Length: 344
Image 1 (cartoon, rainbow, N blue to C red):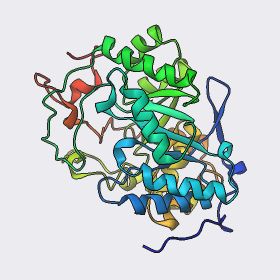
Image 2: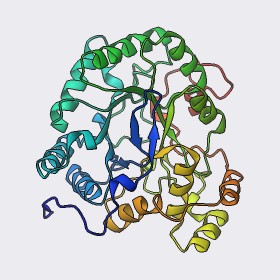
Image 3: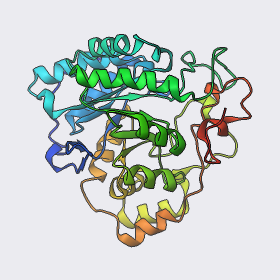
């Protein structure tokens, strides 16, 4: 692929016009980010090229993760972008601790590797990717199981969290947070944490609004970051089941999109930002990532349209997490504590 030199796109969005969210620390974060999970089909180079394009058109929050296998390529782009005049403090770079690095001493090693790959001196936000040490190889199918998988054990998670807190104290990470958490698990963490999570990354789209968890986060000063904001039409095969719904084909979303003369994806992103979560859409196609960021700086939804979308929640979780199940678990619902108690 021909590598493009970094320049600011004349048809992009002024980053200062992109809405901001204020974290519980008082720090401001862009209200839309750019995801970097290639769903097992985009190469590291393709993702990095998309990051270059995304920053060029106005994105300043980039959501990375060690397990995506592309931080080394993204690091080259970040270095190039900063050499071209974008200041480090203008960027918000998030990464995530993968499940096989929860052990004593492993968190610092994992964070150091991410920093080296991304060519950064610090991260703005570091998340614990999943609350279990249950890993899976890249590109595995839905039936893969980690032989050492186990349920959430709070004492173990707190040992991981203490290491996360040490990263903040060492200046390697400015904020820490969680991902794929549940209310019962977060209650324990909030009780025991010295440094509280500022964000929780979770699946959020009009067909999976998670109102109870969303309210819990807001009430506790935790900012929700929403993955799959468009219903993840390109998610891996392992994350597809026959009962999944398609957000972009919802008649209410289509009707509102026609009213605004935009693609249904733009409506999902407007809804997300106006509701108060930070969506992190990903695309390798320039026209898509450009229209995605443009959608949140112009022509907002009306209060009535927001209510219409609130009414189409189908509680349809797309990323069920079957590959993280442990022996003895009933099914994927055990990962999500749906009855209000932590499954064992």
